[in-house]
Image (cartoon, rainbow over all chains, first blue to last red; front, side, top):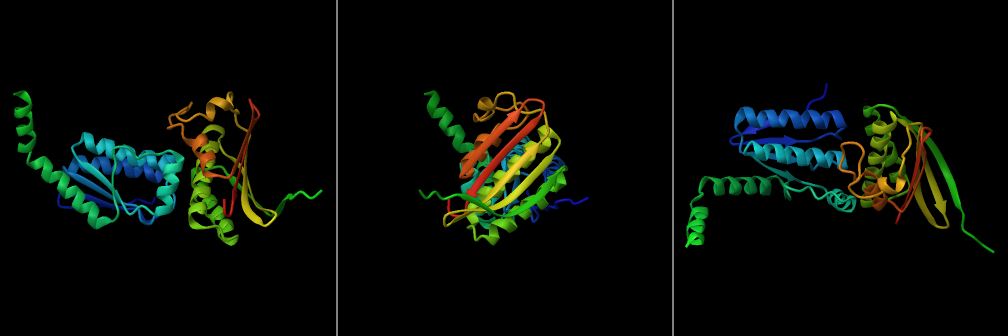
Length: 135
Length: 141
C-alpha cells in the first residue's frame, strides 16, 4: 500500500505530498503524522502541498485535523506551496483552514515555524505583560 | 424566433463504486476540461466540485454512475456532469443545501460549497430511490 513519507529534521517533521490523495491515504497520513509528533517530540510540522492540484472539503478537514491534533501535542503546523487555483477554490468552497498556518514556500514555512518556536522558548515577554496588567 | 440550445458534443460514462475510483474519475474530468481549453482556475473548481459530489455518492449511496458531457451553447463550451445513484435519497434538499448542515460527520460544505464552484447546479432526489445531481461549468464561466 502507498504511504506518504514523513521526514524528520531537527525539531520539525516534513511531509511532501506528491500524489493526488484518495481518502484512505489522507486518513493514514493524519494518523502517521500525529503518532510521529508524539514519538519524536517534534515542535513543528511542515506540509508541502505544491504538487497537489485538488483540495476538497475532506482533504481540508484532514489538514485542519492534523493542525489541531499537533497543537494539542505542542507542535505547530504550517502548510506551504498551495497552488493559486487551489486557494481560490478553497475560499469559494467556504473552507477557511482555521488554526492552520500557511506560507508561500518551504523556506518561508520553516522560518515561520522557527519564529513560533523561538517565541515559545522565551516566554519572559508574556510575563512582563501579565505583571503590568496586574498593577 | 432564435434560441440558442444546449447541444451535447461528446458523452462519456464512468462508474464510481470505490474510494479508489475517485482519483481516476477526477483525472478523466480534467482530460475533458483540458480538451475544451478550460483555464486552470475553472478546471480546479470543476474538479473539486466533482470530487465533493463523488464522495457524497460513495458515502451516502454506496457509489453510482457519472455521465461526463462536453456541451455547447452558442459560442460557449462547457462540461456537464450528471451524478446518479440509487441510494436512500435526500429527505430535505433545502436543508442539505444549507452551509454547515450534515447528516454525516462532515463539515456540511459539500453541496452548498459545490454549488458555489460551478455555473449551474441542479439536484433531484426521491426518498428510497436515489439522487441525481447535475453540474455544469462553462469554459469561461
